[in-house]
Image 1 (cartoon, rainbow, N blue to C red):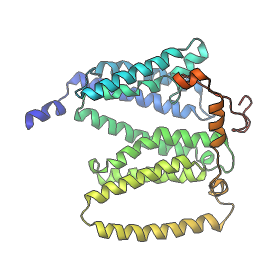
Image 2: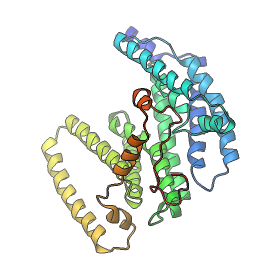
Image 3: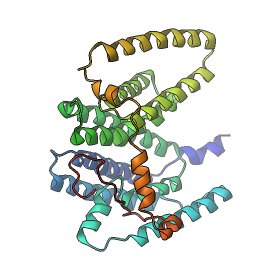
Image 4: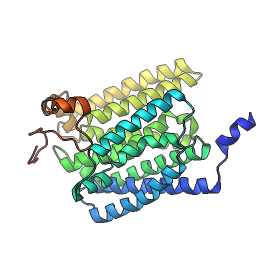
Length: 317
């Protein structure tokens, strides 16, 4: 048994150094990119930091990756997937300065996102897993600091694209990774569990303020799955269910009173939007803009479609 655990526990000094450099580069790139999504950031400084992050992250990732997988099915599937991703990137490989900048510096829609499957090639060792957890915790801490700094924008009411972007990019880049740790709660101390619950609640709060229904759905799923996992492992299941139903009912009544008592409160925006359909027009525009070839091979990494009248003050659509 001890021999079988040895590869999982052992790491060399060079490995540890490379893992640290990789995650430092990743954090530098991610935190700089997240800050650059606001209208207050100095883009030059952010992009310089992103370049430094890439120079630390990409070489370390490739050096640490082991291009072999034990599971034959996964190996075949992964190979096909990488061919498909390579085709997407090569098809839209940047041909001018603006496209190169987009590919390098846009963390959500640029080329860096296509490196994410390579993480599966990292060795399955305890040190690697601990560093992943640490990196996610650092992102979550940064989420709270960023929220505190941009609190006025986050609490802005009504249609405000800058506030909307801040909530979306801060949440999905910095907070959502912590949801994974919340579902893996049994590996963390009580203090860290409490911190992860705080991150979830803060994300829910700002999602309510900015009426981000998709984000609320993600938060709700995380809370639901975490609860089911905890319920499956606890001994006092009946007591926990009774407490949950009672507490949930009280919270529901309190929330209902909060939403309806004052029409000019900070939750007015989501109250106004309610069940408003904001997706059908976008989907129709997307379908109408697809050519026959697009249906077969997609629109590529730089793919765009014409959809006027969705975002306020959008000139081109």
